[in-house]
Length: 131
Image (tube, rainbow, N blue to C red):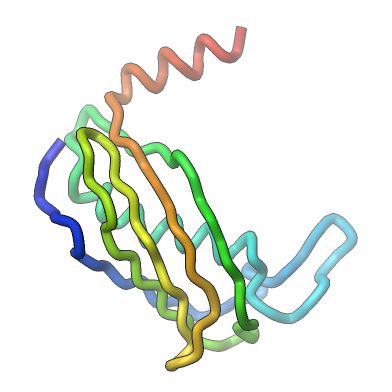
């Protein structure tokens, strides 16, 4: 694992809310807004941007937790900006806080954690669980 970041470093991911991001369940679309589920997925991606640069070829990141505090809707077609900031780096763990904005309006914030683990170890773990 490469130690190329420090606490306080930030990365930003910007996307347009698409139909695939809408609040939808088995019964169909509930609202024409950015669903909390999709927002959480994209927040995890923003935090993973650090992991992509930190992990070695034989390693992979795996999520350990995700919190989403959803405050305001982002409408279909709006541009959302997700900024992840490193809060904690310890051994092979990274924890980030994040904020999601549409312009200056706060849409959501929360925290996300990941660990960087050898791919071989992950494969062994997954195989042991499938028995």
